[in-house]
Length: 445
Image (cartoon, rainbow, N blue to C red):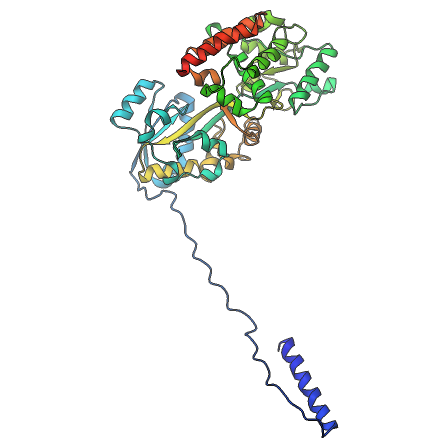
């Protein structure tokens, strides 16, 4: 019985007793209110709809793919594909090439179902033939917005990065940091302060050797881009890549002046200008981890960790060598391979849904084929270095491709020439004027 019914009955009894006590007092009683049911009937649960991971693909269906990977890299991508292949029974027919002309011939004749390519140029060249990824299983919600923006053309989402390698990192020895009481900087101002403290302690902060034969200068180019990301941000870098900002803009001048102050002076880098220009880029890595150490810091891409172990097999990652994200950089620079679709077949949809979903992210992380930009891969990496790089990428506010590679010839070589001239003490404005002219020529401006 509800509390309201008990209360109503109590009132009626009280009124009757009052009537018995006074015959002259009329008693008027109201009929008891009708009570609602004590409990509501349970709501009907909506039926659970299971998504077919094969997206309608049947055993024996073929999926043609084209990519640039070969050797060990091709083995890794096949290992990533394997769970989907086993679950759905699809057959992957792959073609590996690094030749743009071969890609173009294939697209003009019989395009592959899915293309994996190390840049987004196919969006410009073949956008009309590409399929919108959100119509063929793409899970855009698993990516930072900037990845979607980079793969969007004409308002259509046509490409998504599936593999990334970050360059905006600095390698160091935790042993040396502990010895001198240094802490890892988190802002560009803290990095500058740390560099000055190292100089005050009698240590050489940087190992900046960039000798690489005919490609001498590329490590300096990467360093400049990270300085730009810290001083100006990713939007600025992307506007340099598009040509909206000329390469002799004051922001670029500032970055070159910052770089030259370190790269030309022997108190800041091993060997000063001579060391920067003539020390091999691999030797520059080794100098930080030699015994005794000849420098405290080296800015280099993710591959440096493997080179350290190769040169010094007894060193342990996390104890003897480690890295941190370039302090203050408002985004990451690096390389990426993008996935695009020329068909909407069930097998195509299955692969796109797989790689942009949870299962594909986990497979990618477990195989360790560099980094998956899919946010669901974070926390899944078996390799400690990849796990830390994945967190750095996930925390980045943007991603910018290498400027020299993206702008194209003749800019790359002109940028290296500008770097070499400035390190040797040449005039920054004059060096950048030539690089800006090459930028405009490369972009047709």
